[in-house]
Length: 118
Length: 115
Image 1 (cartoon, one colour):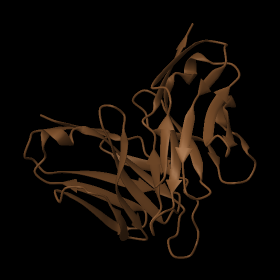
Image 2 (cartoon, chains in turn blue, red):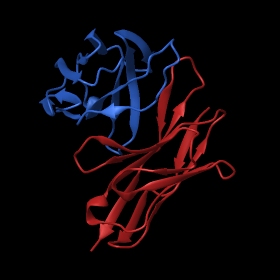
Image 3 (tube, one colour):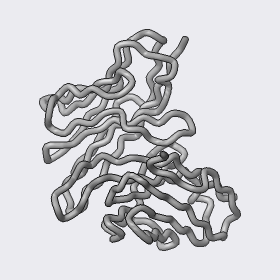
C-alpha cells in the first residue's frame, strides 16, 4: 500500500549514459513533483506536473525531461549524464489542483533514488 | 519572496532531554509552514503543518511547533528526545508569490541524540 513509489532505489551509471527514474502515486493526487537533493542535503524543486500538464520548470538543464503519461505517474529521463547529476532524486505528490483553488501545499514523498554517475 | 532560515545546522541532545530546532521565515503572505523529517537513507516524512488555524501545531512522534507571527518563527520542539529522533529536519514555507505555488526548503538541521 505504498503511497509514492520510485524505481530504481539505486542507480549507478557511467558519464554520458541516458537513464530514467520512474515514479508512481496511488493517492489519487493531481500534482506530482521531482526534487533533487545534493550531498549537503539541500532540496531543490526541478519540475511539477498538474493533471499531466507541466506547471513548474525550474532552471534545469534540457538533458532532464519529465514525462507524465497519466496523473498517477511522473517519470524523469536524463540524457548524457554528468558527474554533477549525482544526487538523490525525490518524487512527491499533492492534492493541489491548480486553477480551482484547491491548494493544500502538503506534499508526500517517495523513498528517493540515489543516482551515482561515475 | 518567501524564505526560511534554520538557525542551527547541527543540534545534539541527550536522550530524555528536550529538543528545540529553530526556524525563522520570511513571507509576504499568510504562510503555510511545515516541518519534514528525513531519517538516514530514507525519504521525507511530514511531521506537522501550520495553515493559519491554531498557532500551536501538534505533529507525529510527540513533536509540536508554535507559529509566532511577531517573531516570524516556527520552532520545532519535543519534550523528551528519543534515540529514534536522530535525523535531518527541514523547515519549509509555501511560496505563494507566483501563479504556481511551490515549497521553499530550509537547509536542514541535523539532530543527534546521545545515550
